[in-house]
Each structure stands twice: as structure tokens, then as C-alpha cells.
Image 1 (cartoon, helix red, strand yellow):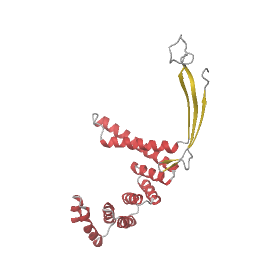
Image 2 (cartoon, helix red, strand yellow; image 1 turned 120 degrees about the vertical axis):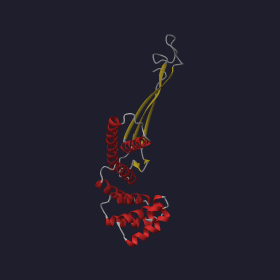
Image 3 (cartoon, helix red, strand yellow; image 1 turned 135 degrees about the vertical axis):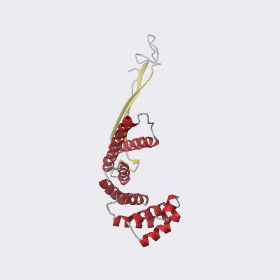
Image 4 (spheres, one colour; image 1 turned 135 degrees about the horizontal axis):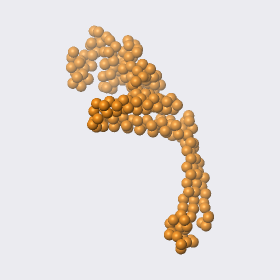
Length: 238
């Protein structure tokens, strides 16, 4: 009871001794989970890891426990184990769109871009489906409801994931351009200078080619691209 009181008031440090005492008297998966959760918030990552692993040992199919351990592993730099745990979470609870998003970023940090792209697309589809159902409920129940901060945050997450998919999917890009200048050497008195009908002449053109390798082109926010450019100059009277 004392632990609960301190938890409700946000006094996590004061709640910890009572939680640990409860664990010695009546250990359970939930108590290990709560103790591990608060130990992580207090920066006691080793203790948090032990308690969360014990909670999962007692309830291996609990997605809450697996997810919290995944976050802890990610913070400790163990992205391989974090990805494995997140995979278990989406298998147990496939409707948790935010976990797909987290898994996509984890794959990206590991350089597994194909998996990251597929996972981000699942997250995007899930968010769009949830938004459609929410819009239908709003239309029939509360048509005047204004956009909430949660919806705005969802828009930002959608945009970020779409940008991520574009960056990882991009392999080829070609740009062609042609510049013009005023024809000052031989002005045409019958036309107004500056118009392409006689007042402008081609000056310089070019083509740019970009190639981003699929395996090493995008690695955790860093890009490696091969770039080529070819330029040409037009004769003044062409």
C-alpha cells in the first residue's frame, strides 16, 4: 500500500524500498515489472534489466513486459536484442502501430533497410486505418470536434516515417537542366528583350546522375551516394 501511495504522488525513489520488500514477501511478474520500470527511471539500468527479465521469465507472453525491456535494451545500445523483443511484441499484439514504428527505426539503425521499409509501411497503413475509423466516429458522433494535439503529433509521425521510407528507397535520381541568358550581343528590335522568342539564348546545360546503393546507401540517418555531372555550353548564336 505504501508503495502505491508513493507511486501515485510520483515519489518513485521512496516507493522502491516498499516494492522490493513486497517482492521478498510475495514475488510476482507484475511486481518485478513495476520495480524494473521505476529502477530504469532512476537510472539503475542493471537492476531494471534483472527485474524485467524476471518478469518475462514468469510471463513470457506479456507484451508490456517485452516492450519495456526492448526500450531498455535500445537505451543500452543493444539494438539486436531490442529488435528481437519488438518483433515478439508485434507478433503478440499486431494492432500496436507505435511498436511497428519503433521497430522500423531499430531496423534502420541496424542497417536492415528492407525490413525497415516494410515495417514503416505497416505502421503508416495502421495509422491511416486508425485515422479513417476515428474520422468516421467523429463524423457521426461529434462533427464539430476540432483537431487535437494527439492528431497533430500523429501527422508529424506519419510525415517522418514517409520521409524515412523515401530516403531509404531512393536509388536513382536524374536531373536535367538548361539555363538561358539575355541576347545582348544581337538584340532583335522587333521583340521585347528577355523573351524566349528572340530575347533569350541558351547559355549552359547539364545532366546530374545520383546513385544510392541499396545496402550501404542509407545507414542510420547517414547517406552514401555516387554523384556524376556532365555540363555543356551553348554557342552564343545557337
